[in-house]
Length: 180
Image (cartoon, rainbow, N blue to C red; front, side):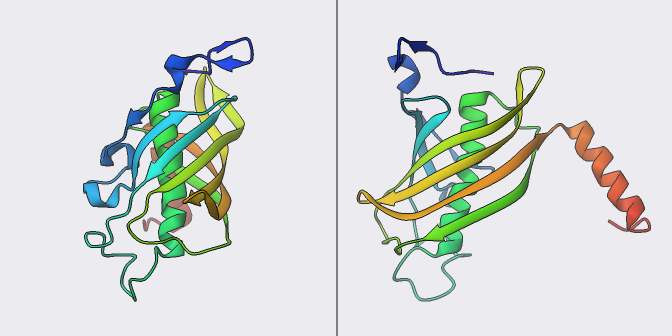
């Protein structure tokens, strides 16, 4: 796991480098549905800044209504994708891990405009490690557009190995009388 390398009270400049993000990092097969486009560490422990761009002409699930703003459910999806990107890019979590969302909370203070980048200020808290690997955390975010907070929220999650997921699925199938 990569943890913040600090010199005095400052984050080392190399760690604050902006990293490109593709749809794979967001767990999406189509680029237009991977909203996070870049990410970097921010000053402070476990703090990150991500940029999201939404192509409302190409994304069709959340825009199945009047297209005059970015829907709140899509903002919640940006939070979810932020967790995935941070986990893969900064904590070196393998892509074979399954991410289980335990809890999500969002508060909206304004609507988000179309065709304007969204900045996500994220912080991982309550980090759970096992064998020096990230296994769980709470991601707390402020989501801004044009410097104004449009939403704030949090998402707690667990990252599980394929073996653990198979065991959990088998247990659930047994509880459901053999039905998945």
